[in-house]
Length: 228
Image (cartoon, rainbow, N blue to C red):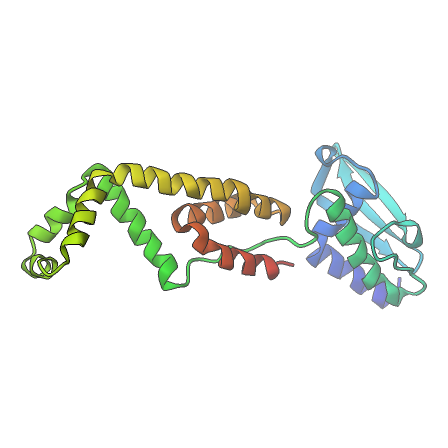
């Protein structure tokens, strides 16, 4: 085995193991439920073919794939060892898309990093307190001389809106987070599923979306763009 072949094997097994799993599922037609994904490894490669090893129903099997017999969108022909990189990338895109996935995987969670995003967590705390005691803010202000004096300069219409909000804080809270839940189901989760985020990463992103609402979209989209 040449040094280049060894480098290809090491690189694929270390950094692109998910692609190898997709190769076995799509090109090898092995059902996902019968496959141990963590067992899939590239064990041989040359300018003609590659061989993958994996466990299927607890039994070790091998799959030999001939480069120029494998369908993929870019129709890359492998005539030398140097053509393999372009081929495996094209195969990864094809095998993932057949299953409805991206060939890239989201492996990180990006915490809120803008004032508006952080502010939504303060809003969440305020709303939570309001659902327990709708007068909590009014009581807090009344106990502080400086806050009471500051509020005395507030326009009458704002005081009216504040009183109206107090009366309907629970309804507002339920409506707000119901909208966020719909956004999660319709926008965030489909993206997280497409990029095959792990369960805990899905929960983390969904939890932040529940609090932040649409403010999370730029951060999530940037994280997806940087996925690999």
